[in-house]
Image 1 (tube, helix red, strand yellow):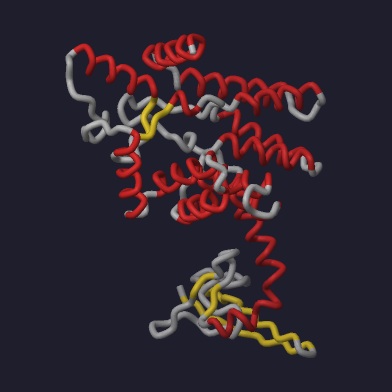
Image 2: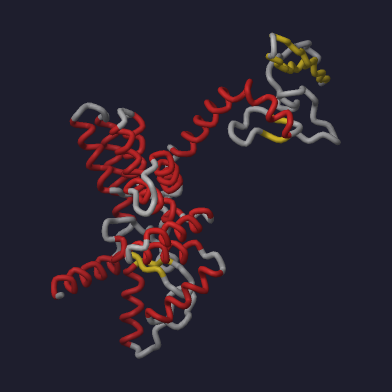
Length: 332
């Protein structure tokens, strides 16, 4: 196969465009014309040993040999770049996560489900920042009491810490840039009403990719807690959380799209969240079905996926822990 590149320059007043066409000569003599990513989109220079081309980070459609070419070509490329970047973002946003952001409990290996009572269904260990399900935690505590053993972390086996000692350990983990410890501190500051400190800790954790931190920042921008209400930043952080498998973030995005008249996008969000076991999104899909925006087949598929996610997160140990919590709450 023999390949030759031809470059054609067109001057239209101040508009300079470079096009590249690849002439492919095969034994059969066929010719293929089209844009090439083996040449700079601005000056047309080909990628050879001493010249390296870098992809446009937003759209992945074109490549440039230098920052100067990138800047010079932006006026011609901006519209197509923004369109393709939005398409790529949607592809990422509406991809069904394999699991929720909680993943599986590292002890029983069953999925952990985000619910309204998440603080009673999961526990974060201060020693190692691992999140385990309440069922495993309760079973382990019962075993330690029955066998008169010292309390220890189920995951790393470090001695169980009291609240003050746990705070010191979490501080150490924050110092080594543990995003889970940073997010936990952000929550503590938020509960105490120190929104400025909460925002600072959440921001640090979000930069390290923490899904819960992104969700918290989205809510802070939504409600104007410690920051000015900002829809663009709210959507950005909620989208990052949703991509990471946060069903509540996904549900809120669906509500936002619905409020803005984007029914199809709203339904997509709620279906993804329902597949992760989100109860609120299933209710919205049932409402959409009654109003004619969701088909019977789509609703049935969402209901099956939702129930499967709920069932996958169940275990006798978790049920016992939840029952114990209900009894304790009723007593007190």
